[in-house]
Length: 236
Ligand SMILES: N[C@@H](CCC(=O)N[C@@H](CS)C(=O)NCC(=O)O)C(=O)O
Image (tube, rainbow, N blue to C red; front, side):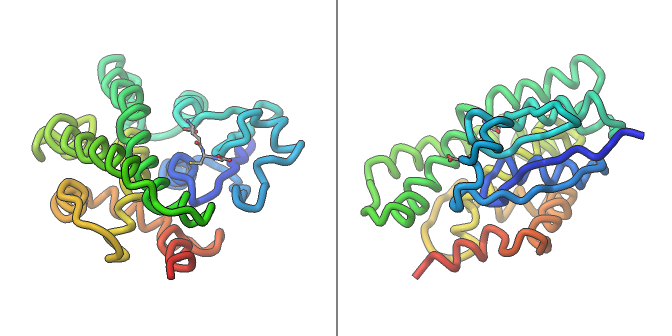
């Protein structure tokens, strides 16, 4: 029997959340090791031996440690017995998933994360005023990216999921990245962002399967507060 993999995650991290949800949703035997970036858990000598970049997530399979969420997804899909739809073996279907996995690094990942960081996380952590110029740049990039997800990847609603009719690891990564700035809207704190609002009001509810998967995170208590609660604690 294959032993459970160990997955080091901080639920504040989008790729770590995606790795965590994937293990749960795909039924991969796993053990979650909670890590708190803010407490310096990723900077210890022991952690740095697993991940020289000192980031989450990390996968530990026996004595093999692997970093980078996309590499982790592919490794698990190739070594574990999971439903084919997550990362299809069919070369063309798999290439379609890879197409999004390549695209997202400098689109969904970059702009949603940077918008969230510049609008909220960095000013809160470093007690500095918001740099409105950076926020504007990342917000524009994020809105453009959401527009492309809506019109190109989801083909104006004709595709049920990012890569077609079935849920794949592309959807997990996309949802976790989009959830980060989206949580502003859930909290009704900030802004009116047309495309994020569109996504959450129109597209997201259609992705019922994804919503069920999301609830794995929001009902989870083993890590303490999920993202929204963590944010609420920090917002005056
Ligand atoms: N490309 C990496 C990104 C990992 C990453 O940026 N993780 C962040 C959290 S979202 C992190 O661990 N940051 C720790 C730090 O900056 O000290 C992946 O997909 O796994």
